[in-house]
Image (cartoon, rainbow over all chains, first blue to last red; front, top):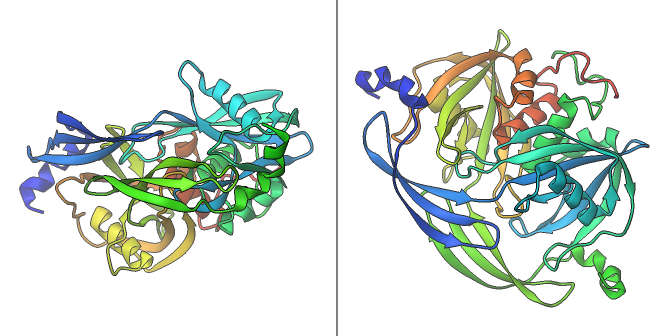
Length: 201
Length: 201
């Protein structure tokens, strides 16, 4: 890095103007584009692959007796069964809170007494502009059997909330967005952490 | 959902055989494919858009005096500046631990006395098969100025570790993979949580 480059480092905070954008592919849940953008630091243009997705929602759903409502689901990226909180895409015209209640009901058959947003993350700011909203759903009770579409096979799994830290640490819960959702639930104190984890090292 | 469908729900745990796969696009950091796979429950085939990426690494880097080493970086998915832990792609022939030390040095100029894996997540199991490894780096000291390539403008930012929960809760740290990395650091007790968060609701 030259000295003149160093002096211009604060332009990391300047946006990169977009010169052009081309769609490369379209799938059921995302589109792929290539954008040509100009560096505010060097003036040169570079290509960036981008993923265009709808916003998503995740729900940390708790029963009155201290259980969290989880789903086991076959996932096509990893080609494995994952253990997750319920969630999915926010439909057009739907608020994040409405999507949270709908996904919870569809994937688990549970309905909640109260749903409250506790966080919002960008799934991958490097590639995607979309958001994933995290909700906690309190007072959940099972109303019906789950209803899923042809590409979505979920199995319901209830776990005591005290098991969640161990499930994350062991990798049994390994979906980054689910781990992020649980982090928000721990920080909002909607989920208890085991005693002993709160003290400084 | 018909009764016969319900009885077959345990096949959520069966893999979906892949019938064919077609590459749709190739960018600098990922490829996009469309896979045709057969449901073990219904026998029908469906198309799935997949993202093929290298494995990634994130580093929660701590100094001896209780600071965490963060970077501010312009991100092209969100077109905003994000606050993140250092990280990036694992190069060919590199171990995750080597990548962690390299990315820390490149993006921040810090070298660590010790690096230890504390977690591993799938960034998005629905679309991607790749992993993101999380490391804690202890005893970090700055050795040189950061070195970044033409598309990567990072600004160094040091924060007391006690500020991290607030930065996540406020959304100032909003990259899901970074929130997941911090969750692993809290659970491994490499990072302290504020007193009062550990008790049950």
